[in-house]
Length: 75
Image 1 (cartoon, rainbow, N blue to C red):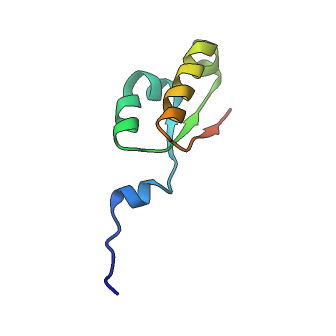
Image 2: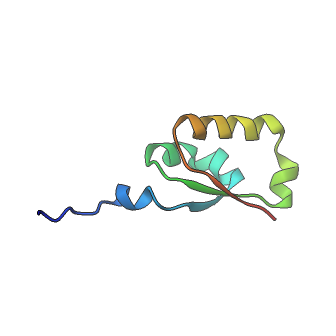
């Protein structure tokens, strides 16, 4: 039986990568989607106060429709 090489994509399927919500939304969303990275989205009080419900809903819809596994890290 041949040995199968493990790729970075194989590893990323099983990882959650910590990223603050503001950086996800303002800076890294395209890369997260392109690289199929599963985010652990972090929230702090400034983030929770600085964004509105439509911002959260939009990000959730985009990530869900792209098939990402998502976890949250709250304050």
